[in-house]
Length: 314
Image (tube, rainbow, N blue to C red):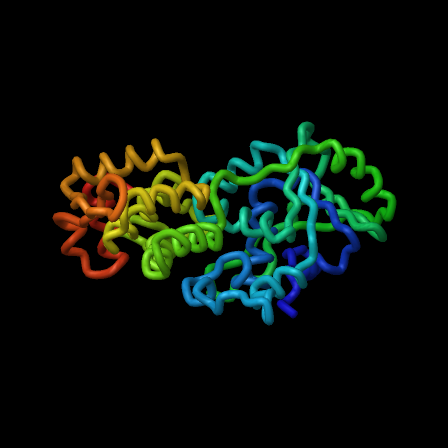
């Protein structure tokens, strides 16, 4: 089983799984970020899988459940009622949005829109419930980055969960626009191959000069537009067919065909992209994408991302 997702409270760590059918109502952006990070630390293979995890063995009839699927089924389910404002503040950067999408896809997080702010954030299960108020700092991060924000649990009310049941029932589910890494990888692998899919994930992780550490709480500059461009560039460097790459990016939920027409035009105008005709046994020739200029000269994914950033921005 994966480690327990745990929230930092002033009086000690609070495992989410200790609560029965828990609901978190009206979290601040920092508290919602803490929830995402708690699940990511507990099960990175589910929330933030790296290329080697994503490349894992294909499922078979004899083994229909992957290791990450098994880990996901062991995670506690948390219903989150959050305002659009709080959600938008967290998911504007691509990486935390992608992590939140992964949690929604696996069912670990049931994210719903809260129409009316509450007096305080609330975390409540079937047997107990607490109001949450800011409470200083908790324990330091494992990487030494400093103390995390902590919250104080106030009260012990077993009826609190039921008072929020009507809000849960009436609230609409909310999904971030950004897809999960697993969805991006799977769609690109299906239409363009393992090499393109792996390069795309590495491109999403790449940092260029001026980037932050890519932390969900650290002003990460990579947005959805930048993620689209990086995924498309991964296909360009591998000589993917334009039609296959567009459809893969659409399947992944990165954007529409028109979106990638604009990306293609940007790269071409920057002198980073050319095409060559590939005859087909039946029908019209296809266009193969060809890296040009600094993109063709780039040595590895990080240099390719930097070449694009220098030419047209992130």
